[in-house]
Length: 297
Image (cartoon, rainbow, N blue to C red; front, side, top):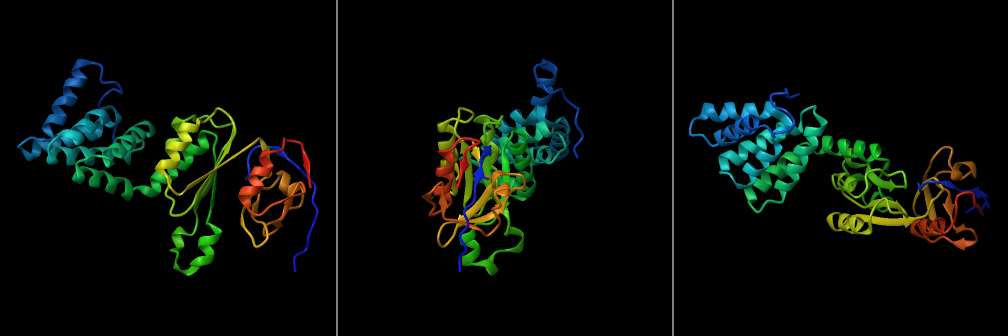
């Protein structure tokens, strides 16, 4: 039997819920450095195995400064040179130089889209081989740029096949909140594309000019499983899913408006401000019509 409670909620502001380096300078502007890189990349296709090996090692040691030349070689060089270029990019991608890692990752993402199937497949294997690290870095960057990352598992999927889901995949990134604190602008959304999601991913976007509509549309095209909700500045502090009669609460953030009002996990919200709440999407829209500081039943 359901027990109905009438709660007063004061809304807050917010949202719902090693490779050696230094063989080369960061810039290749000096002619001598540029010439040396040209020689190393040309040597990737040498007839002499030892020369190819030495060139490969030199490029690995050079780090991020050689990513662009490696990308060009991988895109248009011989199969031998292209394969070695991807090998070097993988070594840079797994190094401790965060700037070089980001450059290598972007290069591998471009190669993954190559019309040369063998090259695209090799780049894809590199990214897949390190997808756990890739996601950890993406989450770290999203948080650094001011986004909020929540983990969970969709209620409908859990209900359909709980025992068929691998234990290590029972929790993954389920919700990203992009508020006015977001510093990444459109460019920072690339990190959301790097998340490993098997099912629905929800993006809660606070209205404002910190992210453009075109960038959100591009994100949705790249990620068919992405569901975008736009809301205002009011912050309730819950996550939820479809219940039998309304929005079932999955979690309540400590110290938020929901917590202060006494809302608890597994509660079901059926009305908000006197209006019916058939699901989470409806609740988000209703919250979007409020202002921080409003008291809502």
